[in-house]
Image (tube, rainbow, N blue to C red; front, side, top):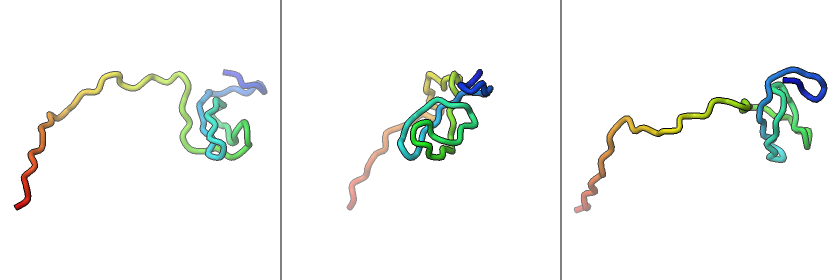
Length: 70
């Protein structure tokens, strides 16, 4: 994929810690597109496979019986 300056790379979602903006940028983006604050940490890939649609319990559960205090 090509960026605005002709840069190639994978596009990701980043969140700025300063202004809380969630924005799309190239994977190596180092600063917020609005306020210029440094961004780091988790980068979420665009077009990623979604997580599981079903939740399956692995262990059966049972109600807990409370005993009155004596």
